[in-house]
Image 1 (cartoon, rainbow, N blue to C red):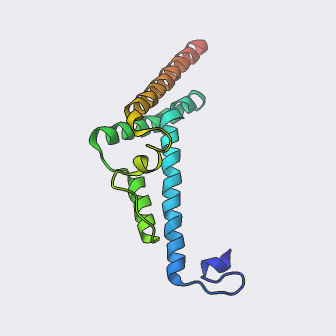
Image 2 (tube, rainbow, N blue to C red):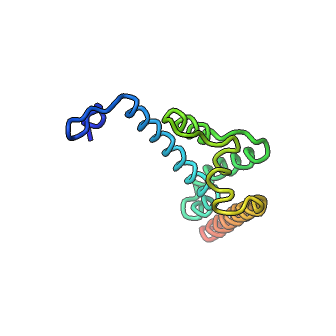
Length: 145
């Protein structure tokens, strides 16, 4: 592995610096994409994790707040910017102007015409997880009294 980092393959072949740079930029793009998918999964179900780990509710509140802010204002997600930058620097096509969700999710996982329904479903899931969190916390506090 160390040989690859200095630009030499195990058989002694030297890699062109642009190839190495492209691989590193591709790694940045792939890491941003993976993190983005994990972020969206946490947005949808992270509140349920707070049932087991109550302090994680604060992280989920921040993630949900970012999700609402991005939908309402259209602010571009830094993960989308990072992936697009990495893809372009690696010599790949960048993300479309519509962004990460339109590229990977809408029209792929669900038809675009159901976007509002999917958003509503995620919002309901988040609210259920928060209500459950509050219910569990309240019952836990009463059981200690």
